[in-house]
Amino acid sequence: MYLRKLDDLIFHGVDRISSGELGKQMGLTPSQIRQDFSCFGEFGQQGYGYRVSELREQVARILGMHKGFSVVIVGVGNLGHALLENFQFEEQGFKLVAAFDSSPNIYGKVISGIPVYNSADLTAWLKEKPTDIVVLTVPRAIARSMAETIADCGVRGIWNFTNMELELDRPDVRVENIHFSDSLLTLGYFLSEQENSEKMK
Amino acid sequence: MYLRKLDDLIFHGVDRISSGELGKQMGLTPSQIRQDFSCFGEFGQQGYGYRVSELREQVARILGMHKGFSVVIVGVGNLGHALLENFQFEEQGFKLVAAFDSSPNIYGKVISGIPVYNSADLTAWLKEKPTDIVVLTVPRAIARSMAETIADCGVRGIWNFTNMELELDRPDVRVENIHFSDSLLTLGYFLSEQENSEKMK
Image 1: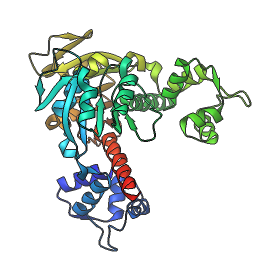
Image 2: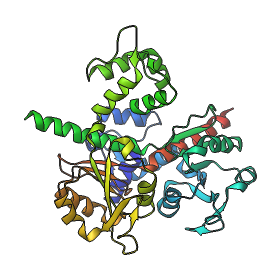
Image 3: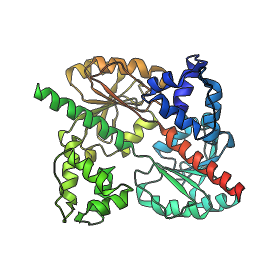
Image 4: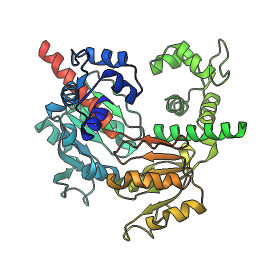
């Protein structure tokens, strides 16, 4: 959230900002902001505020964005395609190196500069080229077994788009589940409440 | 979160559950759970716990899932395709009625049973067929103007996949921004912290 806000401030040419103003724009109290940043050392200066670009740099470092973690996409259906073609991995500090798919119509291609290999070769490939993160966009039915296989190959981060909650019982592997529905249901709730309050009038 | 958990319990054949057990499985305290549910009336019974299917029904009602809000997808690129083909709108209680795209290669088609119309006809269409929610999967450059246009046509919910933070200055319109990056950056942070703690050993 901070990163997005700071990028936005930089985009709008803001050089420095007080914790009070930052809080106002983000719906947080100044003390929450000071507390968040103090966990990671001292960024701000009393009475001067934060230098936006410096703060952005620090937040990016905390997030490990300078490390250039390697990423592989497994499953090049519509969603895999969308990520290959539109998602700015580099901009977020990640290095997308390859994609895998089991369809002969897909593997062998190069999409947005990224080679797509045969899924049958995935484990051999991962063992040879240690990879930090796998983006999982395979069908739901094979999501769990694929995640286990990938974790066995030493991958420590799984970005899970399969619409199936994955919880691997491995403390060394982190799974982030993307739940599209959550925000759609939030919209539904908002509309529903709006209707209810209109009825009350 | 509750809805997903309850669906999961139903899938696994669990009939009833205590707030204590539900809390354990969700990383919440029993009192948090009782408090969350008490806002919406009394669901549970002392010493008996919650009937899972009943609780699921109630949570779904609170979210307005029984209302069948109508949904239109604007922008049928890779992501729009992925949503058309793979996202279970009906299962979440929404009714996907149409899609729009500006490319002559796309409009005129029917994808997964949903007609795709020319974007040029969008405003006329929306005025004729009041629509609750628009899924925005258009290029970033036209995201804002498209959102404003859509809101002008009376749409009250925008599910924004354009990777651009949209804040419309309209209290009657709710925008839910999907930020893929957030969870990828969370993964990066986890890996980075893991590396740091390995270095400390």
